[in-house]
Length: 107
Image (cartoon, rainbow, N blue to C red; front, side):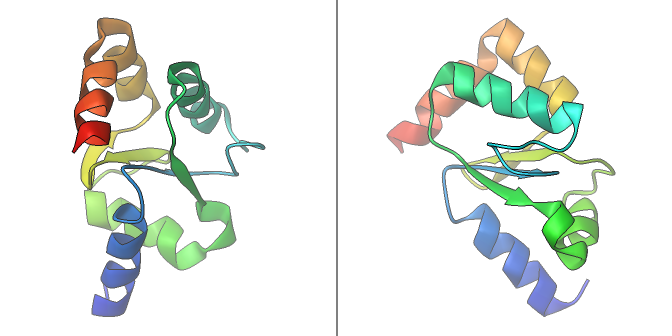
């Protein structure tokens, strides 16, 4: 990964407390897994930013290398990689996600 690409990814991750790299946008998710994440975050009523990886091939490939995670969507809270759709569902169902987000938004 080039230093320029790494910086672009880090700038996106640090642009908001909650950032989702996904296929499509929060208004028009382009895959079921991305839609799952959007539905969870909308259910919690928290502010978040999305980045459509379909609009940028470099970011789409680079984020997988950056996080060492092979799939999209990818969720970052306070700059920390949390996981994808399955992990978000588990964290939401256990109540852990709500706690993580409360801490992030308070900091």
